[in-house]
Each structure stands twice: as structure tokens, then as C-alpha cells.
Length: 444
Image 1 (tube, helix red, strand yellow):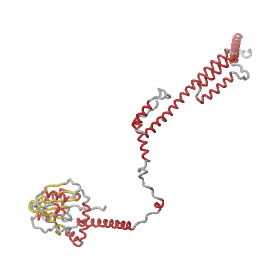
Image 2 (cartoon, rainbow, N blue to C red):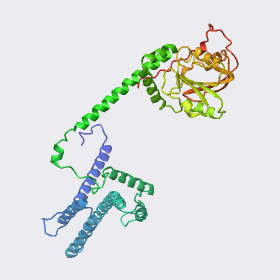
Image 3 (tube, rainbow, N blue to C red):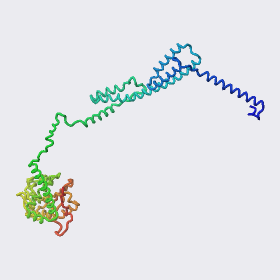
Image 4 (cartoon, rainbow, N blue to C red):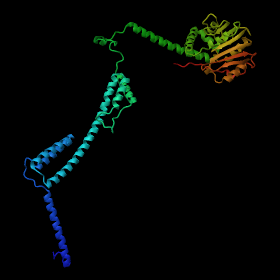
């Protein structure tokens, strides 16, 4: 000690030595207390405390897996009480050990209780959808209204397993109905369209394998249908060609065409009738309705009469003129030169007949045969007019006055003119308003 502290005085050395001795004594007492606190374990006896502790540890391990700590702990406590009663009164050390063991046991029980509560919650969450699925299946088999009310009442009742703090999730009535509708739709997808009783019997294997031999009548019908279809296409092409010739040339050239080929006019008239069937309104019927409201004594001249439909619809006397004859009442002539005297008729009609490039000649001829104050009725396809006002202005220069016009129809325009006198312009004066667009039919 003197060698270790040469620079200190004797009094300081004594104080330090006393402090070291006190520390040594404290350490010795602490060690003695530790040794005294640890119980001496005698050799393994059948009823020793070590075996009890080992049994407790093993039971705890088993019970943590099963979640049944409460019942096992009560059994272990009963065993301990019996053994202590046989061994005699416990010592002070054994009392302290028992207190520590009880504290540890309480902590383990608390942990086990928490684990049990968590497991119960998980079980409840799993059981809720299964409980909900059962009424859904039963609802599909029975009436929806009765089962909806019973299912909602069952769900609202709390079960013995679920606590009041966490009630089960219930579906509303609307959600139940939506689920039911979806299930019914899925079932109807795979439902057969016919019942099995009404379903036709399947054909035998021999009948299915052997194809029916084509009959000669079927070949003949197919050939006739093909021939009729080709003839219809050919007639349509010839009609479009004739229609273009009538609009692109003067009336004299069209008259020569039909004189050389009388069947051409029949073909043209047949194609024209096929087109008329598709129209929403036939203007000749509109003109006939207007004339029926006038006196039957009026004499009518129909320029481009066709099949004389106007003459058959009114009681008036009608002069029918056209380039070819389809009826005995038709007078075949050029509409620019009709065999009538001057101022001999009361009404002149042009129903879809202002064809050709000499429309002015037709209107001047109508002015010639009309009486003063006579009526001129014109009906034409609306697509032919570029400017209706210029057309009306050109007609007034030929000795007419506009009485009425109907432009409401999407396919046809109708005009009524009154004769005021002879044409006010010379034959060499050009009237651009009388040049109408040709009415050409598209290939379909």
C-alpha cells in the first residue's frame, strides 16, 4: 500500500485504507446475501419443488398452444397446496419464493387472457360471413319478401358469442336485394331456352351423317331467282340510261328514241314506277286533290301524262299528251307542239315532266293553249332547283303570275301560276332561271 501511494501523507493513506476495507465488507455481505437467497437444491426427490417448477413450465408451454391457461393454473395450485401440507410449515425463504411465483403466474395469466380475447375476436370475424351466407342461400329458394324480413330480424339479434361493444356487420335491405338479383341473373344465363319436354328430339346418327341429296327443283328455283335478279339489274341500268337521255337532250330527240324502240318506253315507265313506290308522297295525287275542289267543267291538259293517273282521278275532261302511249287516252306527240287550239283549255299540268333542255318551249306552248286567267300547275323534284326565286322570275316573264307555292315537302316543290297574257320577252331572250338540274338516279 505504501509503495502504491508514495506521494500521499499517512493520514490520507489511512482514510483510503478504511474506505477500501468498508467496500470489501459490503461486497462480502452482498455475496453472502446472494448465496443465502439461492435455495440449496437437494438431490432429485419425487416431491421436490424443482419438479413442480418443471411441471409448471411444461404445462405453461402446452397451455399457450391450446389457449387454456386458466384451468391448468388452478390444477397446479391444488397440487402445490397438497404437497406443502404434507411437508409442513414453509420457511421464510420459501414464502418469498412463493410470492415471486404468484406474481409471475399472474403475468402469465394476463397474457393468456389477452391471447384468448384476440382468438375469440378472430373467430367472430370468421363466423360472421358464414352466418350471412346461410340466409342468402335460403333466400334464393323461397319468396324474397318473407325471407328478407326474417333474415334482417335474425341478423339484428345479438348472439351469445359476440360482445355488445363489437356488433356483427349487417347488410341493408337494398344490399340483400342486389345480391339476390345478381344470383338470379347468373342462374338465368345457363337456363335452357326451351323446357326438356318441348325440345325437339335429336336426330339419329345415321340421319345426321347422311346429307340430303339436292332436289332438281331447288336448282331450278335458284337459277330462276338468279335470272330474275340479273334481269332486274339490267332493267335498272337501262332505266338510268334512258332517264339521263331524256334530261340531257331536247324533247324531239326523246320522241325519236321511243319511236325507234317502243319497248324502251315500257322499260322506262316500269323503272319509274319502282322509284315512285319509295316516295313518301306522289305529287300527282296532290294535284288531283286540288282539282277535285274546283268545278268539273274545267278542261285540263296533262303534259307528260304517263299512265293517265290524273285523268282517272278527277271528273274533268283531260287531254293526255306523252312521247309514247301506255293507254288509249294518250295522244303521242312532242309536248312543245300539242294538237290543241289557242286558248282552248282551263288548266295545264306539268307533273314531273319538265324534262329535256327546251323547258321554255313547254311553258310557251302552255301559255298558247291556256285561256286568259287559266291555271298552270307545276310539280318538280326539289333537288333540281338551284334558286327558286330565279325560276319564278323566269316563268313570270313568259306571261304568268305566281299564285301559290309549296316548299314544305323535302322531295317535291309545287307551284300554281295564272296566265296574265302572252310572253313579255322575245324568243331570242335567254332565261337562265329555266335551266334546271337533271334528276339522275344513283345505282343501288
